[in-house]
Image 1 (cartoon, rainbow, N blue to C red):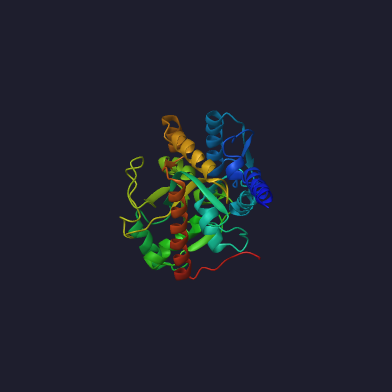
Image 2 (cartoon, helix red, strand yellow; image 1 turned 90 degrees about the horizontal axis):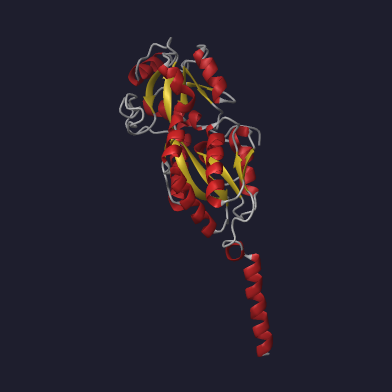
Length: 329
């Protein structure tokens, strides 16, 4: 009897060792190529981050890192692929405020749970939005823009990159706090939105600095405010929307690295350490800053809290603004 119990116990220990990723795979990880899924198109901020992080991870970990572009449905298709991947540390993904926060709140197409289906790995950084207008718009600052919108209820247009995008909610938050009705015009890409804004076919845009800062410099667009709560040193002359009449206003697009839920904690922690080291490198910070992305390292726990806090914030706004999920279920 004692022999049988001992044998059974030995079998269970061996089974746990060989079947549990956290016990069997942590120490030898990584021993083959890692895939990073970029859920947005080539040339997007998410794609840029994926390639930069991929290159640096390859150098640090000594393994090939392959970038998989899985664009579609404002990032929901690729993000769903991340959620369904094996939690073994060999599939990572790029997440944004849109894919993990606003899409789950506003899109009927979302098939993943932003909290339960992912293991947050590391924050890469954030890209502030700016409120820009075509030069023909009679507003030189936020207060004049609000006054203009009040004089033309529902007639002042702003672009977004889809009904479930952060740009959509940034405009909705602005309208809710200012007590004005703005007309959102959804686009499939920020590039097309900027083209129409430059042509004067729409009045304004809540857009990331990456796609607008050159046109601001050229004088082809007028910038009214930035969406961070405090001015940022890299763009000191741009006033915040918060200081320009809407105290507490904030809507920045963050970008992060995530993994499927149940990825071994030891692998997540190692990735977090390596990625934070990479983000601290002067050449990386400069490259990101050229893309208007400001580094902001967080622990996995800190990243999870940021996701949960943003979900709470934007869900509350959706209720207050009467926003409903869009799309065919």
